[in-house]
Length: 384
Ligand SMILES: *[C@@H]1O[C@H](CO)[C@@H](O)[C@H](O)[C@H]1NC(C)=O
Ligand SMILES: *[C@@H]1O[C@H](CO)[C@@H](O)[C@H](O)[C@H]1NC(C)=O
Ligand SMILES: *[C@@H]1O[C@H](CO)[C@@H](O)[C@H](O)[C@H]1NC(C)=O
Ligand SMILES: *[C@@H]1O[C@H](CO)[C@@H](O)[C@H](O)[C@H]1NC(C)=O
Ligand SMILES: *[C@@H]1O[C@H](CO)[C@@H](O)[C@H](O)[C@H]1NC(C)=O
Ligand SMILES: *[C@@H]1O[C@H](CO)[C@@H](O)[C@H](O)[C@H]1NC(C)=O
Image 1 (tube, rainbow, N blue to C red):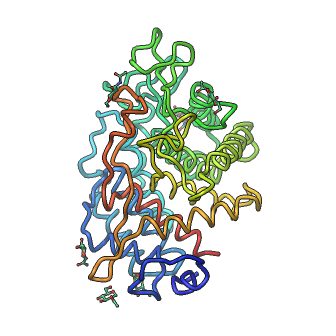
Image 2: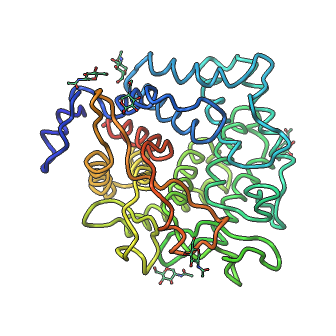
């Protein structure tokens, strides 16, 4: 749907949109290219890259697509080395670029050797990655021993699954290992009553993290962006995971039950989601509707509906959330570009993980974690 149509159908006032014939996805994408964010192997750069690529794909925009493709190509040297990636530094965040590399390898007819080598190096690192006693990848070594965070599932396991689907589709050991990562995070962090998951858990015995629950090891609070990463990880992994293996049904249940929890947790007045999502914090002083989590859940709902994983009861809530994204979190620059607002800069378990900690972290303008997710949500919305 074009912005002009949105303006007509939206009941309430939308900020005056200067280039009203643009789509929000491509408009945000070209705005971000104009902001000259770094092109590197950092996960944030690659979330922006994926947002730009999804916008380009939905609208058949060759200019934007080649921008995204060239950016990834520039990261990988001719011999398959990923620039500035240290294969002896174990941080799941650094696996995320693998998704972008595999995307363009596949798009280019699966023949670019340098991408194959680069992806194989990332994949080989997973075979050496430190793990906790139950087999879960450490979020980062040596900083977060035995800890699994929802964020890390997104950073590494979608890549692990996509790689396996392309290069080792019959490797049942790998498929079981992939679903194990989800199983462990579910076992330790899911609240079966709310349907939501805590930010992470400490798998050390005895627990070392100050925030660890004495029984489960879980951190005490539900942070919206971590849940957003996890929701997307489930959605994308389901598309490549073999349906015949028993892990598929578990992943699907994790996705649909999380979606149900998100539906319950959605703020009925605004259509968005709170930064700290667990009771009793929604609506409490200091808490707020945060834009990156809201964009990720909107994307997950819209794509989940499109793929037939979610039913039509998600349509109206997704549309309400999308409307909030476009009305509250976009600002219009004088030069005709867009900026992105309302994304919390960080949330880390390198803290006491308290409510006071999460609400004390500042918001940033043009944060790519939120804007990249918004481009994906907008691209999904515009497909309709
Ligand atoms: C691609 O998107 C950019 C940014 O919105 C736009 O300026 C350009 O006209 C688009 N190109 C095509 C072919 O649609
Ligand atoms: C447009 O203006 C914004 C805000 O000043 C700036 O960040 C951005 O780089 C500008 N874009 C272009 C393409 O000049
Ligand atoms: C299959 O996956 C496992 C677990 O990731 C790995 O250790 C093994 O090397 C893989 N097998 C092949 C043939 O690649
Ligand atoms: C699980 O969620 C319910 C419903 O929001 C809440 O009452 C309960 O305290 C939560 N349990 C934990 C361990 O956080
Ligand atoms: C539309 O955007 C372009 C840059 O893409 C800008 O030059 C132009 O001034 C904008 N139009 C309006 C009416 O602001
Ligand atoms: C946790 O850390 C926050 C700052 O990040 C601080 O305001 C709060 O008092 C701390 N809580 C405890 C129990 O130490």
